[in-house]
Image (cartoon, rainbow, N blue to C red; front, side):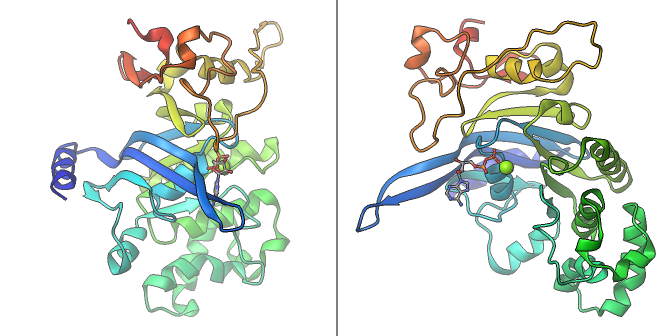
Length: 337
Ligand SMILES: Nc1ncnc2c1ncn2[C@@H]1O[C@H](COP(=O)(O)OP(=O)(O)O)[C@@H](O)[C@H]1O
Ligand SMILES: [Mg+2]
């Protein structure tokens, strides 16, 4: 308790910070055998820290299975953290419950990857969008209709879409409904979990532009999750790269793209298609898949796939350290810098 209060005080001095995540862990227990004994843990998120500044976007990237969604869900308190602390506007929300949690939840919302699965198909759009408001305010659908129709227009839908059902919309429009729903309570933070991954490439930029406009207009802070660095590039002020539950590189957007330091980030950047066919780009192909997080490699978790791996990488766990201004990396290549 003592320790928590100290951390809390330190945090309050950082004025422009909206969210601070410190040493967050989320482990899922594995139970096996007839007696369902606990035999281990899936370390989905294994000690990550990050800071979201007000009005900015933090892009969280990494291949599928790296723990991005789990990180987002744990930060929003949709699931309990195993360890670590989450501060929202200086207040430690890691363990709040009951009415305090309910109150805190108004300030942060999630936009999901699959807008179809996350919208109840039996509810009409107007009621889907006013549901979060009705959870908090004692108002009827009728009371809220003008507000909801205004919101629908703001996300690029029409007033009469209020009466339609999710199946009557395209993927891009459905994601707009999801965004309207997330905005309904006028939140401060939105965690957007791969919001355009399920959409056609031609639609993706429209939805990304909408998210950017809304950010300006409503002074929103985003944690923007993607498996692909090209999507994150145009959205983010800061970028964090995750691999197997760990943050391997964090920095300002420009610094990360100009000089990616971690071999994993270098590989992800090399995979971004180059629009100019005259520019030849060397693609770094990573061997194999992300290892099973139930049984992660010893030493640096990336060493089994790293093109630069050294003998010592099998043994020593690299720690994140700042090797350029506002740019941290966890890799033994930078050990002596
Ligand atoms: N509810 C759960 N129970 C057990 N394991 C889970 C659960 N949710 C996610 N995982 C595991 O945690 C790891 C990270 O998953 P996830 O956060 O979905 O990664 P990402 O979003 O980067 O694809 C995966 O190995 C996944 O199988
Ligand atoms: Mg995910």
